[in-house]
Length: 137
Image 1 (cartoon, rainbow, N blue to C red):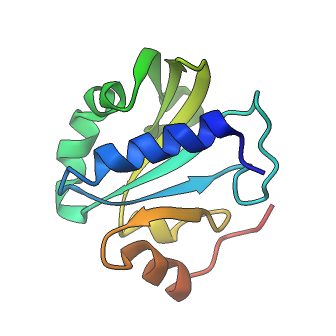
Image 2 (cartoon, helix red, strand yellow):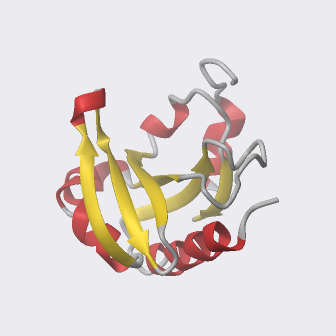
């Protein structure tokens, strides 16, 4: 079962991302697909954008995060070799959220099948149907 704060955050993120034409979808990874989230787990979201707009999205990552809720702090994960990952701490409720920004082209390169929470014109579902994860956890 998905905890209410996690679901509420994802729903709010969808409402925000739908308004920006650069975004093609939002998927939940990590513990969500296995339904192993608890109230203390971080929320791992994959924010998928149009391949021609990756640069713009990457430049605006922190501003985008700030529109998703009360973002207390955020940092990119270059130290872990993942510059596309923005690790955020949100308030009300206190929630750690990993925002993995990627283009639709890069969405095929994954370790697991995420749960598609929202998409434009079936874009994410098509990628998942046409490719396989590198390894399932």
